[in-house]
Length: 453
Image (tube, rainbow, N blue to C red):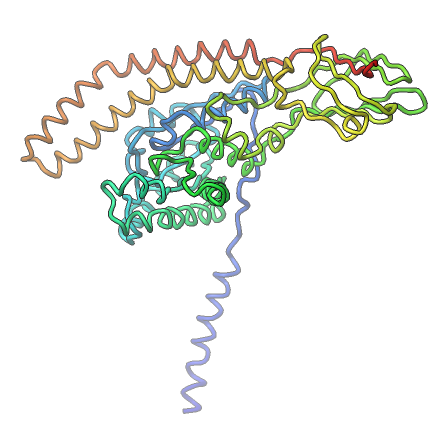
């Protein structure tokens, strides 16, 4: 027995050594820490109907238009209602790769889970198609940013009736999506890709709000986040991709009768002041506040978007005790005590400021762009996807005459598609040209005056 052990021991040591060697050869990847962007870079938002809604994508565009007004990015919405990872392959070359993206955000999974409890074969199919999709993104020279599927709101579904989903599916589908999202996160970590958690913030905010109102939802149909929910998605992207959260910071100080200044992301000039607390100066900021349309304001409030992602502060220390009025271009925009000014006042959500008004014009114009030509473009690709789906169905069921007729009807809808796509792209670009005429920061004259009795 002893001799037998001596003979086989080298064999086991050899296996152990190979395993250790294999383990030690593993080199961990660093997930994408932040976007490295320059003028002309292209970003593609790949997704399903939640991307096709043109909302979170629009709000992220608003962020880029106002935060980086000197940098013109090429941003393309590639969302199509009903898409699964499988469907994205059919339009990949024309709708994604042709835009030569530097980054491709991927929001797919809501449809891939088939609105049911977790099944191994369904997930394995998603895993296979997503893995193939990620390789294609890498092959075209882009970096993928994986985004978890968004929240399935089971309570909203129950309040409107289960519909096509059974009670078990309603109960478990949000958990199914959480599983998919966890795999995506691990894939991003292992492969050095970008990652954004959409599922977590939507669920957490919904839980918090339901402590006050049990019927609260940001996803009335249980699947597609409304505008406020899409703000949560947009802020998740800004947060998880470590994009800048500051518009500008101006610090003024009165000491021994003299004024001094310090700025971040702004240029201050022509400063004039007195020891009695009166001051005026010209300020040219590098960016505008991040302002969103009216229908998104609940989301702005829930995420504390202004203070968390659009900080624009003005402080003045050393002022004589009393109340002060702040003017911009001769218009009163705020009243504050000397203590409040020393701490700093926030301007990013003050509708009286010309900067907020200018940013609101940008948001309005971009809303027009998304509700018009961008949505029209996505609808064209929706028709294209229908054709590809029906072709696969006819191939599976060649004797199904009704399915054949649906395919014929769908094919008619994509006749002339190429020309319509080009026209929509042209119109979207023309509106973007207008945006870049009005999104450039302007120099403004600031004044701080003591309130006279």
